[in-house]
Image: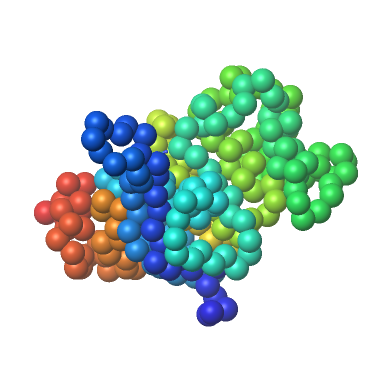
Length: 251
Ligand SMILES: Nc1ncnc2c1ncn2[C@@H]1O[C@H](COP(=O)(O)OP(=O)(O)OP(=O)(O)O)[C@@H](O)[C@H]1O
Ligand SMILES: [Mg+2]
């Protein structure tokens, strides 16, 4: 394996249980991903784009270990990556303070024991990193704006110093101005901490600014994967051209 590879996915096929079984239909599985293979280099920002239902979240959830029904191999150089989800409103427990929520990943850290003081120190450090005022430590999620909540989610994902962060539509639920701020934060983290990022979005314009390479997916398959500039200027596949045209990027 190339030393510079942080993630290598080969021949990934992912299945879901068929929930809506039709009459006379054999109970069985629905395949959501078909033979997906790709490598990711250390420090790279990889965009994954494609229409709703094409399998972007499925791919992300399988890489972080949430989806377990798959065949193929997933090699990760540094062990478990962390994930940031789309909706900062529903992904935070409303009954817990920001401090409690951010501390939690350390309490269940399998790799090391953290003392209470160490945990608090780390929470403060990360709150600073994601630009949340220190006094927010005692606030509840309902007392924060959407953008601030997404900063909490990103902070939680950073607590254990991951080398790979998977952000699944991290700005889709936010206002445009707030979107730009969160994108800026992710770029800062990438630059300052050297984290590799998988950035998932259905918005090809958002992906363009952020990513070194982009993967286009359709109906559970990888259509094309290429350096961002190249893909946007010289798309090889008809489907990529269609998406670029629909996004108003290509005439
Ligand atoms: N828990 C589940 N059980 C059964 N089928 C599922 C489940 N989650 C997703 N699917 C199906 O798998 C396919 C891929 O869904 P996925 O959520 O990965 O798409 P997506 O690209 O993330 O879409 P979006 O842009 O809307 O978030 C879809 O057909 C979806 O209906
Ligand atoms: Mg999704």
